Amino acid sequence: MTPRLLLLATVLSAYATPLPVKSVSLQGRLIALSETPLESVAHTWGVAVRSKGDAGDALRWSCLRLAGEPSRVLLLQSSEIDGGLVGTVDLHTAGEQPLLETSCQSTTLAPSDIVTDRGLRAGLSRDSVVRLLGLPTRDSAGVSIYHAETPQTNRTDGRSGFVEYSTLIVVFTDGHVRQFRADYRVIN
Image 1 (cartoon, rainbow, N blue to C red):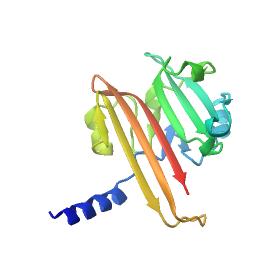
Image 2: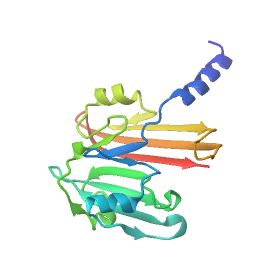
Image 3: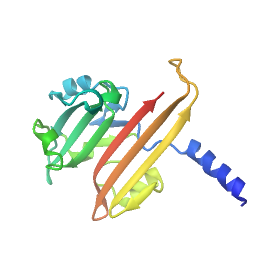
Image 4: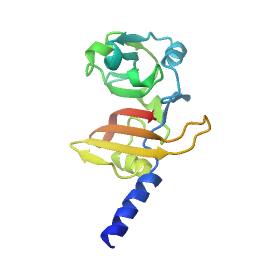
């Protein structure tokens, strides 16, 4: 394949690659990233919305302590750029973000009740993740990173010329998903 054809194939595959994540469900309740208000999710699950910082450092979040061992938490986050909408869902081992976890409220949700739109959930084998998502953008030391940027030109709300950014970071322990962080943004 000539260098020119290889470049064309690379560019075209970037447009055809599905985004790693656009939504997450909690026991079947959909959270569309960059569309669902954090306040709405917090109300549904009966948890508080906390905040810190201002302007570019502003962060709002809700925290759920999940059932089961090892102890894990789910952070639903909205940064300044998200404008009050959930932009990040972070499932991780309790104690990794102590400042954000001080307000965690216990729930009956299990880590496996949190599922991305592509089927990723805690406990899946690495092979299952590759079958669902394909090969990662980067993979090292038990951490796989999936990232895609998809330029768009038309949208039903009349906006054009925007880019969707999606990143999914998956952490494996003993060959199975222990935790993941999902980010999705639409930038004009």
